[in-house]
Length: 485
Ligand code: SF4
Image 1: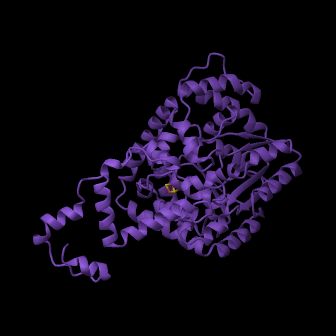
Image 2: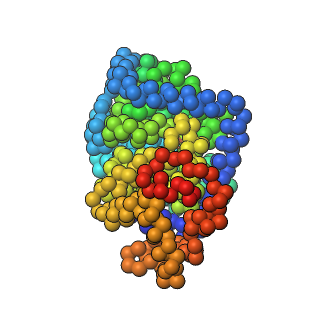
Image 3: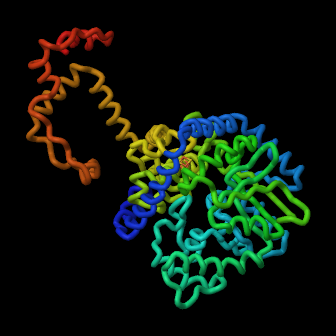
């Protein structure tokens, strides 16, 4: 993917996509606001969610071992994956051991992050997505553009065309007379998927939460496809990021209130599936959990950036972000788009490449994402922190020199005064566009007109008599200028 500004440029030119996004994010935003405002204790819930996640992350090693013990005691098997390659190798090996070549999948960000479907395909295993939006994305060879609604950039008419053109090559075809009525589209998907659910012996899922003290996994979804995948197959493999842990069921209760209201704008989640190891004669008889690091312990080591690991993937920050609403998710070049992607992706992958280095700038720092985040992740704080990291890289010498010169100028009143007088005297010479490489700045911005007289000079002349005595304890220059302020 190209860096964000380049990718965003072509995205904002797509008026159909902008329309689809504005409609979809506006609707979800409105629903969220309505159900959140019903709860008087929402700020307390938010603080509780933040505190639970922070405490868990501080003692992550302990809780992970507790989880492993509990899963094993309940008849499951725990695997540890340091990175994407190791996780893909483990999952591929587990599927191959069953002798199957098809798997059904529950929507999972972790498996998209490690590109599991592609790794399975290389081993001759076909992964079938069963979430409606993921199915649309898979059938159209597209990429997800939203955490919760991966096909948010598509409208009904586009989805009908995708179903009519592509369903037959993946299984049960769409009806010839398929309309773009949402119920007809859902029915076509239901019939297409039903065959898969009934015939596939292996399922792969993620987990929204993993409860350490009982070893239980929790998946929240809205369509019932997850319930089918988690109960019908013989073997279940769950790929779970190590930050998904909550210590106890009482802790889980807080998130089961925060997540549905923040994500789909519902009071209660439609399908919440929980399972603990293996139960003879009921559900999958073989259960594996792959605990995925893939850069998360590096994020944990950063005292500012680690708050990103509190994320419960609700997508409220995407739905409220003015940048995301205009660019859509593809411009972020990652499975994690929007504000959370702008802080998570550069931390998971590092900022060495231009694509990741551009992400902390994909924000106006308006703070709307922080306001809506149910676990109070201060996304603007992390964005600024990451920008510091990016400009500290080699290759930003000109920017650093410019900031150094600005700091020197602004830190001395005499210097600033002299510069302002010089700028006023030469105001007719200030160009409308910057020359050379700096012209990129003025391509989209106007250079402000330099006034005939600076405010400081005007104030000295007009307001000095009424100005209060300066009582500051600044440096020499402050002391000299104090009486004139
Ligand atoms: S950062 Fe906060 S608002 Fe955004 S997806 Fe994560 S939990 Fe939701």
